Amino acid sequence: MRDKKDRTSKDDIFEKDYDKIRQIQPKPRENSDQKIQRTEPSSRRSLSKNRQKKGAFFLKTAAVPLLAIAIGAAAGLGCGYYLWGYERPYSINLKEVSIPSWIEQDFIRKNLFSRPDVTLKRVDNIVIHYVANAGSSAAANRSYFNNLADQDPQQPGTVGGSHFIVGLEGEILQIIPISEITYAAAPRNFDTISIEVCHPDETGKFSQKTYDSLVRLTAWLCNELKLSSKDLIRHHDVSGKNCPKYYVENEDAWKEFKKDVKSAMKK
Image (tube, rainbow, N blue to C red; front, side):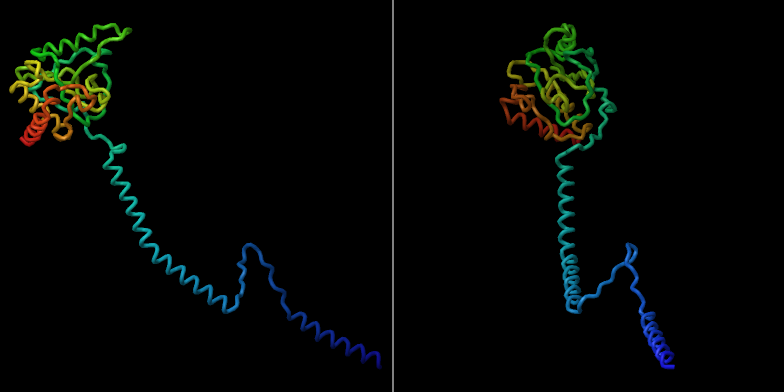
């Protein structure tokens, strides 16, 4: 009997202990799909919240000036890009410019020395020259440039040319299209229009008829090519050459010419 009672009491104790063990649930294993939650002391949690508030406040207060700086920098770069003309597209199709009837077109031959047939992509300045051959006519100077084609292209030769020639009687010849470069104002042949002007004597001063036609032609070109009188330059301004002689030696006369062109542009 004693053994049976002892065995029964031991079984009861085991069952009670087993029930306690069974009620204890094992903790689930953490994996990559489950977020690990950690409890922090209250002091640490409050400190973390304070830091978050300060960080948020800093971001809010710093965002406005930083955004303003970014916008200002972008605007500055954009304005500089526009004003400095980096890769700014040229809006004028030089081949489509219509030449008025008061300009006589008489193109010279295409050749290596005076009309190389190279496309002029844009015009930034108009260059004024003088022919440096007192008393010569526009037709004579056209013939000179045309005859440069007769040189041997395999040998060094003379180069020269011009888009327009203004004669002693005010006649205007166009001998090269404005959509082609000329050998007239190196090293600015790639973005300039050149005008050769005849003169009666060695001073290089133009006659009144010649002057009036030059003003008319230059004003028309400025309007067509969206240039101003400030974009008029002398050959001297490009290379230092004494050309056009009268305007190099008489600065006031050059300034007066530019004023006359500016007035003519408004008519």
